[in-house]
Image (cartoon, rainbow, N blue to C red; front, side):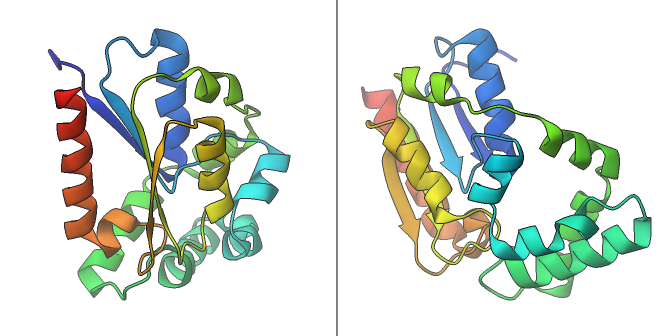
Length: 188
């Protein structure tokens, strides 16, 4: 794509493929990384440690093979666990639709994977920013704190009035901080 030192942004599960990329290709071609309420490890133990109680309580329905069970659970999960601010009807259905298009077997497969990524995280040298919503009921704040401990040079930004989707709950702040992060990389 001709990108020059792009900053990779991983929200939620996207922290995993972001780290898969770095594991496979290294950091030479990227400028930095921003984790937004991101998971960096997978497996039963990690799932229990990093996922919020709402998500854990709904996990059977979220991963169900029964379409209506899954849709109804996703609907409830979006309503209760992802956003701090109330979504408009259009926003709600945008997020519901983007989750429903991912087949249940894909979600099941993702969370059956076992990986910690601690080796990749501890070897990162590029700038890293970690953002997390203080009201996140999907991924626990402790997951981001753990990532920050493994990457001591990371900067952490906590959003008091944001849930799991910090970029949606506080878009002006998120975009400003992302721009400042990208600009700081360009100056280093």
